[in-house]
Image (cartoon, rainbow, N blue to C red):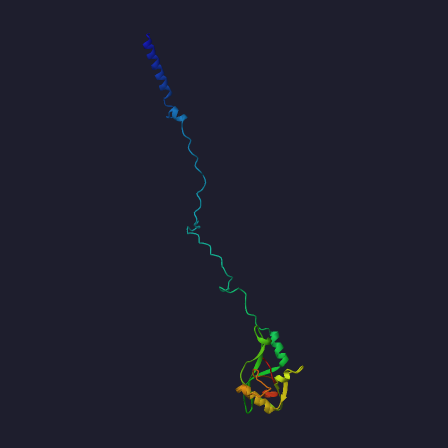
Length: 218
């Protein structure tokens, strides 16, 4: 065989070998494709994140949480809770009544006696000198017993050491001062004065006054 024929045979043989390498495999894929296949990325099995508002069992959106209260229940804006003005104590009121006894607030006088109403001792915060007497109830007539005793507050005598300031006076002087204090205080003769028209009294039957003394309060 000539050299040219030998070369041709060699080329044919190499071509057949190449065809054999590229032949299809049993599964219908090429050998080259099987050896060079690309790996498939792994798919994450994690569940999708829950939405911001997870629907409830009925499929309706969950209701938002109510905001916290900024003040205590029953507390109004601008006022501290639990803060109240203290009420007068029963002990204070009882003490005033125990020291003085029955007190009347005289409104005016008539020929039969004094027209007045019962008074009570008032205590509480902001009250000067710890308390004062205040008329309560209905006006009534208080007649004066024939042998009744009378006392007025004397400011001059009150300045004397150990004195209560009470000055025994006649019925006439007492009625004049009591009437002036109820109607025109500037006409009251010295050393007497007007201090709220409050009088401590001792009463007999039927609102009959057996003793009466003027109560001083600044």
